[in-house]
Image (cartoon, rainbow, N blue to C red):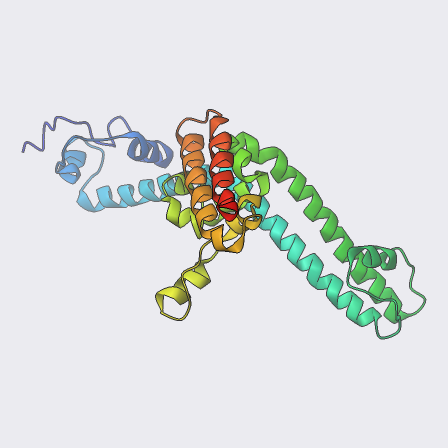
Length: 282
């Protein structure tokens, strides 16, 4: 191997050693058909004074390149959708917890107190005649605000999901599609999953309990919220969950790799679920 004249240019070719961004771009975009003695080449071409400096420059460039890759990944539309659905779940959970706390507290002096958002909103509109009522009113207002924010986040998810994953959203509905992407980590990760894994996303605790021998194998995870599973007789839900997961896995792959909308997936799923449910009448 000739270190002086390698057949492939080094990532540092034409790069100013002081320009870490250009070096990062060279690492991110460059490639070589085979390995070479790059430290020696870098010294011979004047990029670095010695091997120690070469590795220092390489380290700085790789860190910068990694940070840029993470930033690009986090700003991707599917990642934004994942953040939105997680925020929606957080707002919903916190709002419900606050509503329960408010109702329990209010129940100490109001017999009509109840745990529902209608009562919480009525309480939030009050002025509070004493310090206790003032704090209850303020806490009720926070619960109502979080409930409002959850509604706004849901609307955002329902609007955004079809643009990010048109086939997955059509089959699962925008909210469940976003939740599947969130659980998988990204649309790309979901597209690479086998249908059996998609089927039990969200049921990790039950799956681990099964692997430890403490519970039966879960038949479904969050896809249970889909009407195709929830609306099927209990004894056939496993079959329905497998059928749905299979189509969802295909939809995720189409969305990630091509992005074209394929309505036939919906028709195929509907036909499959209809045949599964028909077993009850045979």
